[in-house]
Image 1: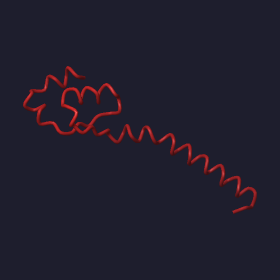
Image 2 (image 1 turned 60 degrees about the vertical axis):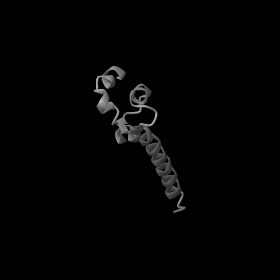
Image 3 (image 1 turned 30 degrees about the vertical axis):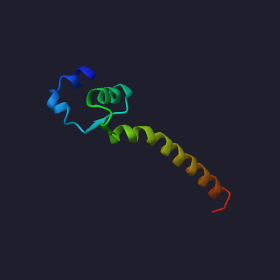
Image 4 (image 1 turned 180 degrees about the vertical axis):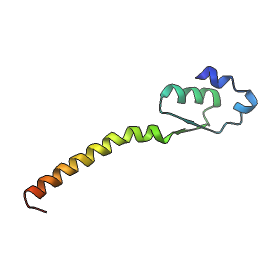
Length: 76
């Protein structure tokens, strides 16, 4: 990745302010090395959703089991 980023002409690299990437540390570290510490790294939404979706789905399933149990007990 770093080699690819370095293939971008220097005058263009110097103008980069923000990089959109996945969450792989190798990509974000390469971007920081090539574009400088001041570059903003934005993680694309696909990879963010991929990380939080299992936790949210697990919580939803847990809540559904709890509610079904309450309904079966006649408490709702």
